[in-house]
Length: 542
RNA sequence: GUGCCCAUAGCUCAAUUGGAUAGAGCAUCAGCCUUCUAAGCUGAGGGUUAGUGGUUCGAGUCCACUUGGGCAUACCA
Image (cartoon, rainbow, N blue to C red; front, side, top):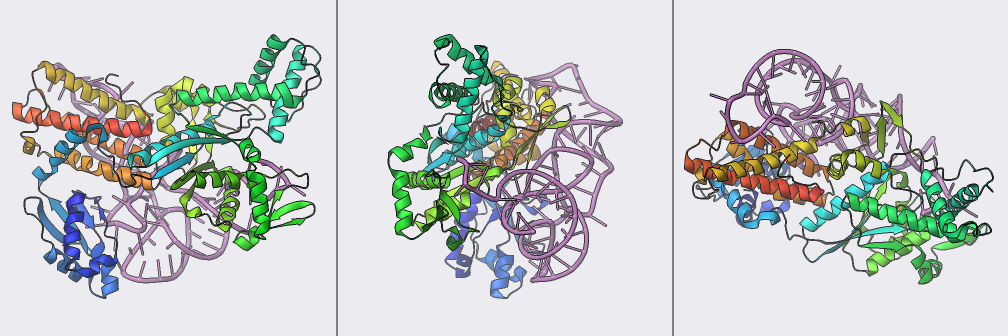
């Protein structure tokens, strides 16, 4: 429907050139009395043309050469909206399109040939992934899916660093637990990693090496073993919720390749850095940021900014047209420095989209759980997946705008009741499978012959909703908003359940029954496609 | 103190980016199964969109201030 309108307006632009001055958008009105689609173009143009919106609207309409077989009427309403009413039987064309495109219905080629990278999770291997990481992981993966749906070739990457203070403390935590097991322990510091997994790693080391590691330092075997074990667990955890990284990028590579040194001398050469108090500073205040920041400490060790900039340069060199960085809100102060640094070096920082998601608040037994990896006071993503399953985890994290805090009530999630809307969608899908099984037994098959019989409001509403899917996918993807997909699917499922209640298939006249089966199949296809974007399964039975 | 994000129904959240009468789910109440899955459907109640002012044909959305929260504000990442 929208495509037809766009076509129609493209034609009209030749006659009314002022239409080229604005972006003409079509929206589905909230009130169905206002038609199938609506545009506010006349109101926007009224200001530019210094005419009344109604007069502009009238002129536009009189120049529209629309097909009376497709559009029933076009009217001016309210302050100057132009409302379009389509012929009901035209709406059934969407079923044919869905039957043709099947699992590809909703995909578009708008960004075909473009490469995107989504960098997400990127947690250092100091402990198991928590529920907090879960939001990042699921949203990142789903953003990747959405980008694929609009044509991008997408790489998923996990950036980490196994050097630095955090990791030293991790290694030493394992060492102390190991010594404890040999009854040679000393006091375990409060600010060390308290988790059980540290003890498990220590136990494994004891099993393998006996007491031969007593003199070993924290940086060696202990840290290596910890990193290896923890990473293996992280990959397993991600795999359980259907996330596969294309690449794990170790910050260390940037040092080995000499990128850090090169970058440092590049900044120096361009007079973007200076030395003071034994440290090297980046002139961020000259680049429009708040204050200069240290890039190399007086100890000689770079701060995270330097490798982060170097890392992003590798992304540019790898030829990505779009680079997504997904962070929790605790990083909201760090990325502007990185972007400013890149921009100063001549890279197009517009190609980098930084998405910041707000924190997950965990509620357990009516209380907020304060999370800390260090104190081992957290709920792991694995535990959550054990409790509710991958589908609920993925759906739950995808269903909220990332700008808002996500309130994760463990009690509710455990219930697996109808408070989890994912079941509502899956139920609609399973219901259709069931219908198809039953109707087959009755000798009924889907048919595209008599779709014009689909004229009841419940049927028409479904058809119009199906039309919106490709648009919704595009919109969601371009704005990186996974939750819009869940909203769409819930609305579609709701319309289907209403159709199911009002429009029986078995027992209806054969032609009508077969047209309705086609509609049900189309709805099921779209439900399945939408769920696959979210990474949620579409069961045939529940 | 300063920067970023946020405040919408009892609770959890939407609102097509400035559009028409602010919508869903849960919870509460009242109905609907001898017929394709009741994990469903129908109806009811529930709102000064934190507050005040401003911008304009039109504001939950944009601007200013106020209040209240989250995250930052390191020579940690």
